[in-house]
Length: 82
Image (tube, rainbow, N blue to C red; front, side, top):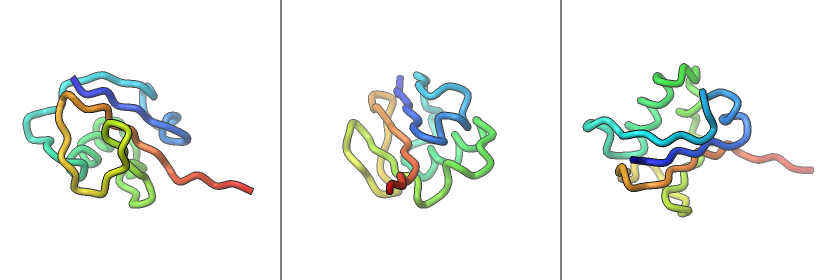
């Protein structure tokens, strides 16, 4: 089962900031995962934003990157500072 982690404002948008679930058979990359999760979580496009970064097993990746049920997948919004 894949472990999904959501940080920052994304954690407030989704049902739970930490989720463990089986990815459907048709979800094999980050692009498909973003679209599926955005619809499943009623995120209003937040997970589709290009500024949202994804890390797979603690490594930042670029869409479309392969995903599997053995991965830890983190969704991170941009961070501002001052």
